[in-house]
Length: 114
Length: 113
Image (cartoon, rainbow over all chains, first blue to last red; front, side, top):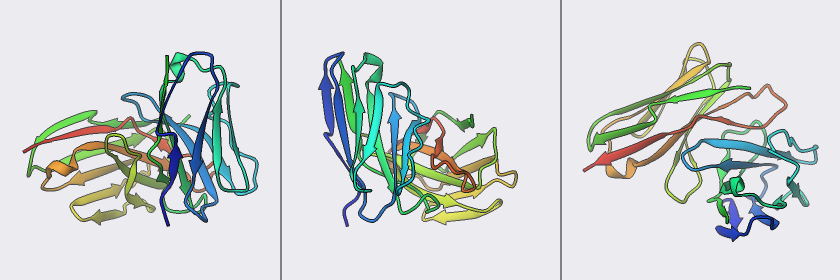
């Protein structure tokens, strides 16, 4: 079916506000990942969900960042009290399983914190 | 943590030329992946490598998994304008309980007609 989708595609917010970013993975994919890409940089791992296992949150930069995945499908990344340094493109990816060949990325959400 | 060094950072070439970029790691990976990212899009998987020494082609693209398992290269032959974009290498450890990919910083490719 369709690829990984993310919404919104662009989000502009004021410093201090909370934001929620959504990811719809490919149907049937059990693994879901969030990455952050700052301008001119590579992809920085944030968090990883695999089935019903406890998520790997080791990449989250601060306790202002959290993510959940409901029903093993849709995931939401929440950033509380946004800061200007949070401005980046947030990319979601999914794969059939942790061992599967490659991760499929969504188009990303460009977050701008004013 | 594991570091991936990707070079060159940028390349400016003429249409028809061949391109080579590489990636090295401070740690061993058992999977190497190469992605391409177009502006405003997420990365798209180009080639996946699973065995040391493996050489894999995908059209005009050829990638190799280094014998030491700490490096990989990507070649693009006879470049065309649509090859423009950012190319990322990524390493994955299938034996790890973690699922993340470790990415290089990317190679920005510009192709002049």
